[in-house]
Length: 576
Ligand code: ARG
Image 1 (cartoon, rainbow, N blue to C red):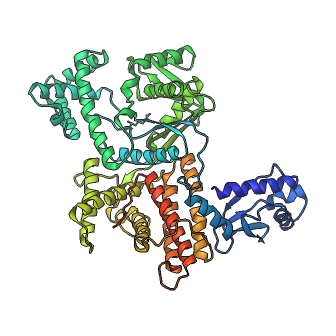
Image 2: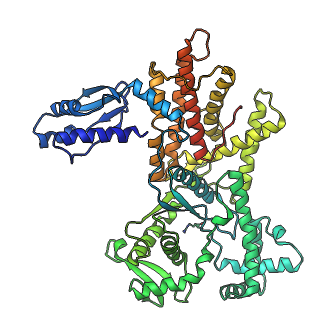
């Protein structure tokens, strides 16, 4: 149920009957208490067209609009606002429908083929925090898209190719020759990279060998490719370990790294030249972009092939766009990287459209995110200034959750506590990231994210658990068919919020902003707490019908919270 869409449709019909079928239909949630749940603000804009005072127009609309079933009152306020007070009976009916429906009264959207490009670590090194954001946010959006009925094609555009592999392969070759196995040699990629770099900078003849490896690799030398494959396999496994710890849905089969496009790069450039999109400039192949000219009118330059013949990150992305459009039949593509790549994707899109690599009605959406900062407001680093390894970060989250749980009074077994720490620790890290507006930088702070108060995963997990404990207490005394009756203000506020779940998810899938779902769940949990305080459920003197009705609201809240958290990839707990 999308209340806003329903109201828009009803007002649209009313406006049509007043000869204003083309007028905008601004319906929004009311922000002030006592002003109903929604507002229609379109009367003022019609004064000129209908030659009447806005309040009179508002009255005409109120008379014309068919909302008897949905609203208990339409009230004209101020210069001509229409405040819509939803009818408790309608809210109760809709809640009843949601309760009986595993999809919670949310119909799927017409299915689209949607490519989601996320995570995409560079395999020469350990995954770092920037990839953590891409992985978590991307996966949150993927799950929401799938729930809404779309066919999502995950594309993990890993950085698995490039000149830096020359020195890495030369170094790996020596390790293997000294009888080390790749898994051990590469157990810490950061370390391995550093060792190779030191040799590259200092060891006589090593840089030369590294360059030879690059040439052999690019020339398709079988031995060299096997070595490269060995490196890539171990490195991908590092990422897969992180995905598993994070409870994200990416798998090895979703990997479509940069190397996968190698064979196509020459074709891409040839095609661009043939179409006249790319031209030669000082030996390089470039596209001049008048669309992004500087203030003196000088076009931006997008290089697709270097003067020495080498290809770039950009060339690979053009090949990827074409492949996704033509082979994967993408109707929409979402790419999650940090905001510093915004210009690259803007340029890539313009070039791809010029070259017809992407359909005219195909959507290409770069979804940038801000940086993860330490408490000092600077980019997140280890105490010694190094990059933070994701596995270590996630292990620390679980340790910290375990310490917090140990401090609480409880009767859980050690095993139970370990499982709980896992769910709470990982949930906290993910939620801290997901709940911030995507495009801004955010401060990574252990204490805030692990708090049981405020907009955190533990708070939501705890709210969910409290609901489950009511049902444990109520035992067999629950009528799952009971009729819902909305009487108290807190019941009305809660029921309204429950029916706004679809609006939240629809925003997440259009704007690729999981924080909208987080805010929704936080507000839902908070309204639930208010309802719980104001409306007794299992107390002796509560009438049976009220008790059962309230239990139904509890159940729907639990279902919705659980569902929302699962879309975010955060586990719930029955007890905590
Ligand atoms: N590997 C890149 C990085 O770490 C991200 C790749 C994003 N996807 C793409 N199609 N370029 O910055």
